[in-house]
Image 1: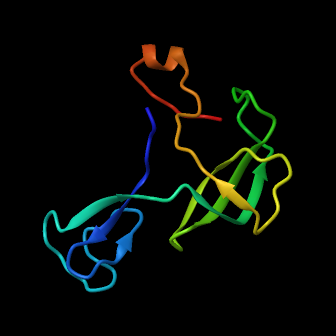
Image 2: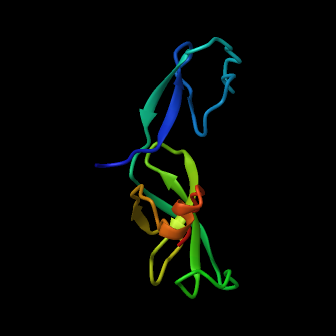
Length: 115
């Protein structure tokens, strides 16, 4: 099953929002169900990135890459990055997935996502 991340298109003016907003940022239209869900593009370019090296003890990786990507449609979003030698401006292709789900956390009724 392929997962998608959706933006929301105003039915009145066509402006696309991500994340969801209750009021259109462009035309200020406010009506219930006046936005259509549209999938975000998977391709973009790397705008900036950083690595977190001081992770909690239960992480199974030494560092966590975080980035901002400008998508093909001009929207920007934040995400985790798994690129060994990233370069600002490089083309990237994203995918939406559950990174890791701990079984012991499910048994306690909690769900936590970690790298």
